[in-house]
Image (cartoon, rainbow, N blue to C red; front, side, top):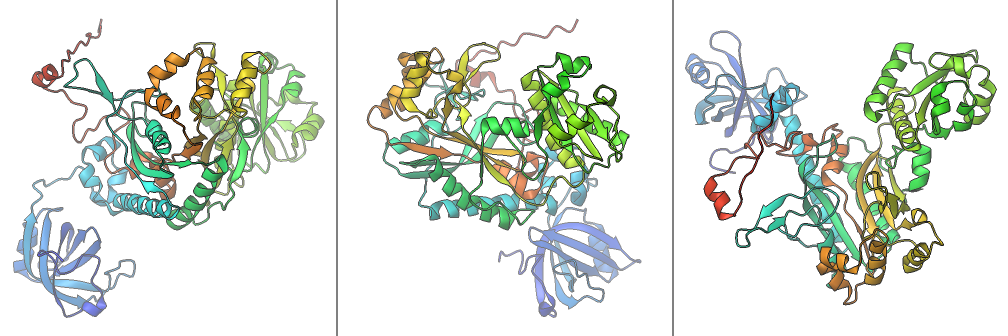
Length: 595
């Protein structure tokens, strides 16, 4: 123990009664009962201990101390007359003989009550994050994160993986998001980039002869925040395996994650190996997304032909109409309207609806356009009494997206359709290698350009000759999904320079472009690279799921706000002109027109 305490505030028990002790912590609260009697709560990292004041002299001492000051209390432990079974130290209290102020709180008013900080405005919480973290409920998420990271490390090393750190200052690489750039003082006009992921480095480790690599890797992407994505910095369990197939990667993850989720999660049930494998196209058709929540028993069905047989203009104009049949639905009209409004906010597309009542009649929503088609609805979609049908219509992509949001939102809001208290994992496999870009209108990589195409060089050459549609080429790429949250993408890597060049030629980039953009990896592969595969589950997202938190910021010690600002430290900030001159940087910001 340190010189300031003999015991922590969570340590004393009835067996310690009669001992002379010294505790130290924050003075959480003082509750006066009469003129010379009070209960004082002292809190440290480990818990709380009650101190009882019984004389005028000691009352004067405590009245002169502000809440949240750090103090040391020396005194005698005794059994409490009124015990608190909900508190670990609830059978004892300390009668103080001496109180010392170790660090005075110089503010009479706090920005928020410590134990109710989660009810405060998020801006205040982030500005005073060091106070927010004093809240045991907030602190517990950080402790959970520490325990999960330690368990991940232990599990990976037990599987023969070596932890190797990769560079933070590296070269800019086109990986999908914007880079954070760092000016190079010794090389005017040139920049380092913070790594969006250690992708190239871990593949280079495989070519270097390391067999199994991992690290808890910091990654940096200049992208907008979401509930499950923190702007700026995040961490992932990065791993790579030499001489490995897709199934080898799956086997490791399926052995590592379920025990950790079952032990540390809010729920103690997690999918056992093997996780379900769902082809990307099947997932889009059945669940309306590539991140299905398998705790929900709803799915998407096609009703385009049926809808085109109505006189409803929106159905007739739609190229694609999807239906989600929600049986045993007892929602009121008002609740259905709210459900549809929530779906529209999330998907950007308004869903339609109809309901079959307990007598088999269609009511509400677009019922008048579907009346007479009850038999078809029963036969084709399985609609029966007391069933709500949500309908998404429009262009194929927007209809599928809206249908996917219908599945997840209805599953969460309609009782009986989600087995919420469990962790359901699945693999999304067989991603398309290429797609038509929305902006360019030309062939582009669909996801990871470093993925091995299913069919190798032969399938690419067939596509080049026009024998195969490039959009029908699939990659050995996979996503790990848990409870509707994408934890990671991974792939069997394209380790053959000839196949790599051919893949890039499909998107109008030649061998010289590949050499220029990825010089180290291309050259390394030319020296004989082993087949390799990997994945990188997001640590922040895993802990968010384990803690049952809706926002990823709740499990990050010092998170940025939604605008990528650290309002506690004042970052990003203006720097001195001298610093800019050393880096040969000139600031040129055009003033906004406020007219």
